[in-house]
Every structure is written in C-alpha cells, then in structure tokens.
Image (cartoon, rainbow, N blue to C red; front, side, top):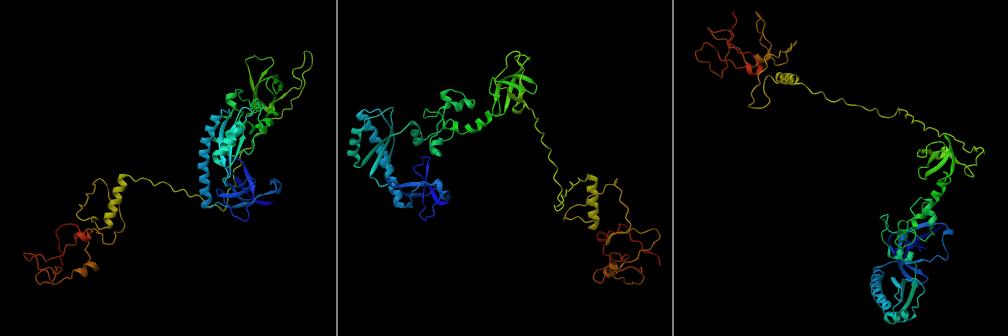
Length: 429
C-alpha cells in the first residue's frame, strides 16, 4: 500500500497519482507538481489516501508544494496569455489559409512553452505557421492534432440527458462503442439519437452493456419458436428489463397474444421442427415460490406501554351552570369580581340535597327549634343586658342604638353568613 494524492490538470476528467511528499493535502487545494514537461499547477481531486502498489505507475512523481499566492498570481497571468494566444493563433491560421480548427491553447507554468490544440480532417503542413507563431511569442511552440472526442472533452458542454459531458467530468479514457450495443439495448438506430455532440456514438451506451448481456441470456430472442406452460408458439415481443415475452400460441388467432415471464417459457433449439417430427420437450417449469407473509414482531416486554389519553368530554350547558352555582356556594354567595351582579338562579333547576352544610354556610332553622349562638357570633358581638329591654338585645359601646330605642343595634351578618332576610323575632323568656 502506498500513500498518494489524485491530481487533475485543468479539470479534464483524468486524474494522476502523485506522492504527497510528507504534505497534508486536502481535496480542492491547488498544488505545484513535477511533470515530464516541468513544473505545473493543478488541482487535488482526492486528498491523501492509500492505494495498492500495482495501481501506481512507477516512478511516482512528488508534489513540489501547495500553491502560494505568488503561484496563483502566475497562473492568472498565464490564463490571460492563453486568451491572447487564442486570438492570435486563429488569425495566423486564417492568414496561412490552413484547413484546421484551433480548439485550445495551453501555456505551461514556467512560461517557456505554448501548446496549440487543433482538429483537422487530414494531415496539415503547419511548418510556416509554427515559425510565424514563434516570432510572435518568443518561446517554444507546439501544435498538436486531436480528435473530435478530445475536442468535446476539452470544451465541455451539456448532453441530451441534461448533465455535463461524461468525458469532461470523470472519464479517464475513451472506450470503444459500437452499434451492436444499441441493438442489444433495443434502442433506436437513428444516428441523431444515439450520437453525442462530437458526432460519435455516446459513451454512455457502454455503461449498461454488461447488464443487458446478462438479461439477453435469460429470455429468447424475438421471432424464436418457444415452448410455454400453455403450449408452443412464437415469441413476438421481448421486454428485457421486465423479463417478459409476448407469445402467439399455435392454434390461436393471430391477433391473440399472451404474456409470459422468463421462467414460464424456453426457446426450442433449432427452431420449429418439420412436419411429422415430434415436438421436443425443453421446458422445465418451476413456479416461483410465493413471498412469505411478514411475521408479526414479538412484543418487547421491556418497552414502555403506550398510554392513550381519552379526549375530554364537553360539558353541557346545564352542567356548566351547576358547576358555577357550586363555586358561588363555596365563595359564600359572592361574585369573584367587583361590581359584578349576582346571577339569578333558575327556578326550574332544583337544588341538590346536602347532608351537612359547609363551614360558613347558612343552615335553615327547623320549626320550634331555638337558634344556638356559635363561637364566631359570640366573639364578634357580646350581649349586654339592658334594663327594660330584651335580655338578648346587644349593642356595641362604639355604636349608638337605632332611632326609637326599641331595637338595639345589631351588625349585619346576612351578607357574610347567608342569614335569610326578615324581621328579628326575640324568643320569649
């Protein structure tokens, strides 16, 4: 195992392995590497990682350094020089009248070499063009002829799938593609539909070729004489992805087709036998096992039980009114807010019987029963004997008697203790 970093030049798909040279390089960093052409600036497509020794081509060149601000400034200057060289190169080609198309210009990092990439239908004599360009740029000039696929890889673009070209993104090398692949995949043989922008067959035709080759082995070809579980017939239509075949059975109407799965039929080797020859038995039909039903998961005894809280029952208007009366009784018949009027009780609603009154609640007197003064009344009002007056008449020293002198002053306890209204009748001695 060797520790390497993957380096990509000018974002052109292919990556190369370089030795990290004891540097911690992250993905996306700009680095300076040593190549056969000298120092070059490139981008790290994958940081430090381990690969097999057999996957590395020796000798493994090292990474010189991580690009500094000065290195990035030199790279920007070289980009401007490439744009100027592109304009000058196209003008010189037109002046010399050469049948060639200039695709790209590349200046090396050290600035002592300029490479021109072009496409042409045949061989081109560009010796005079090289001399003319060398007199302009005052460095080493190289012209390199490339193919149409390399042109699409350098320029880039968007394919009919709506994504960038595969060659420009990740393909390392171009793999051979043939029309047979389109036939196996049941694609249209129209060149405009199976060709890329470069004019060649699309590289993506090769991606699924191995999968289609495996599927073709499991179903008969179209037009083959087949044996099905319902008899013999001819395969009319084959769907490779669904693994289904439409068969016209012998003895049925020509317009009647029956759909079979791949395991329900088999192709007869040699085709349909001649008249008088027995029909061979080639199908060994085995029905597919039914999918087992999903077993219920055993209950986990350690799991928390699920508690379902019942929805609150909405109280009726009568129950709300009864609850309000109960709250008023507990408050001693007073409203909670100041200035609120006491709601009148409905005459139709009967009062529930109660066994014992609450503390502070009025208890009606029975007929013929004397009222006993409680401790609270004794504490608040002390009876004082007055000659010639009722022995139970009371008056407070700080309050005068009412006008007339017949009735002593008594504090009003009705509102607090719920004493019923009415005239006070003293009991006889």
